[in-house]
Image (cartoon, rainbow, N blue to C red):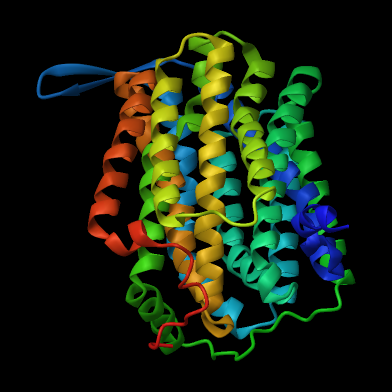
Length: 434
């Protein structure tokens, strides 16, 4: 019987009813959300196209790709609300019932998607409305993400938290495979508006799961809604250099290596594969992530975690460079799959480290600070990629972004030697500042 134990351990978090409910609800909702992300980028590029925008600067005419700039605008529409609301979202997660907070945020995001679906199905949609709905959804997510991530460690025993985080990473990647693939098919067969409608309906899965849970998600030691509570969370994060170093890695990698942001341009103008190929380009990183997740699941632990983390992020940047160079569709899919595989390895290490080293009463605020890095990075990176691609071309933006990721990972490794030496032995220790 002993040989069966590892298989059971890989899924042990799903043995707990509340986590299982939330996991399956998130699986449905995440797939819907990824459908909408893919649909919005495709929708905007179809509205704007690759028209040239001429600007005169110091007597010189500069021609920009207006479609690429419009795609970059999506990232900025998400970034601004995250920066404004993320830290407050963490304070709410540590001061309020996390389950009820999620029910409010999930309901709000369902409403926003329904409005976009109704407007799109009715007729022409102005660009500003797409940006507005994107920004409102990001504002709701700024409160939802700290509550959700802080809730999970209370649904499973501490010794099974790494398994729960691995399963959450897996569900995210499954959703990232299913969502864009289904979006590409539905756009081809029906319309973008139908994709938005599917996403609105998908939020019901999480709402039903939350309503059915036994656990009531208040922090172990709730803090009041105050400026002091916010500052306490910031002090905790910035006093823990190992947590801070992983956040820097998150930000740099996602800021510079936003290859999938420009996927509509690669699908349409470079690889010439249309909407179905576009869906496959977006799904490819998740396929690689699932393969990496399956490999990690057969291991009891990851040795030399700090070094593995740094190598994984560097490989993430290298695969991004190779994708930017490729002009063959199948090879591009392979490189994007490598991007996803490297990202999964680094995500599991980073997320487990942060959750275990953080006390429950400050976990929401730690997550909210991390959210500024991990979600602000890619959204601001989308804007940066759009600007660079608009002036110098999408391949140049992707290649230089990947190279920058490699160089900045080396800087983090040099600046934070404790991360290089990290072996996992510190996960049970809590900083004395909290």
